[in-house]
Image (cartoon, rainbow, N blue to C red; front, side):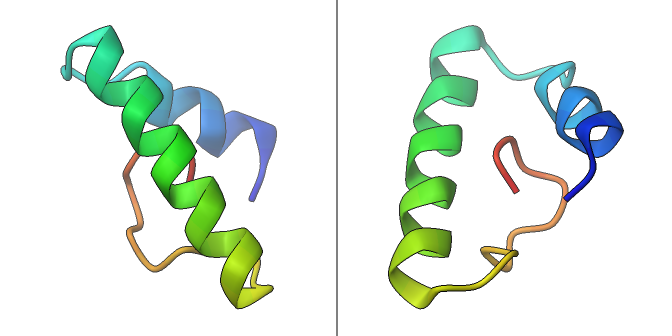
Length: 46
């Protein structure tokens, strides 16, 4: 994941609380699966 892509995902139309929730959820998925991507391309945190 690039910093540019991460920043672009955080500037989406979703409310801030939804973005924070998605970042936490997708980071947890990546950590548990030991992968670089959570499989939800385009979402915050992926």
